[in-house]
Image (tube, rainbow, N blue to C red):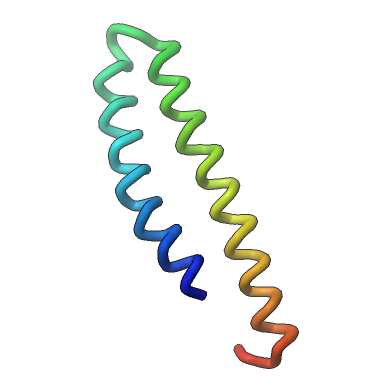
Length: 64
């Protein structure tokens, strides 16, 4: 579960920065705002897959 903890900490910082950049770019450059939203979405998908795999490993090992 160390992987999930590290990715969670990175995610908190990364999502906060993405939100700030998204809000800053929203008025002037809509495409840049959409790009920052896509960066956050792609990281979120990777995090969800990693968490799912780690959870399945724990269930198979009998640790719940």
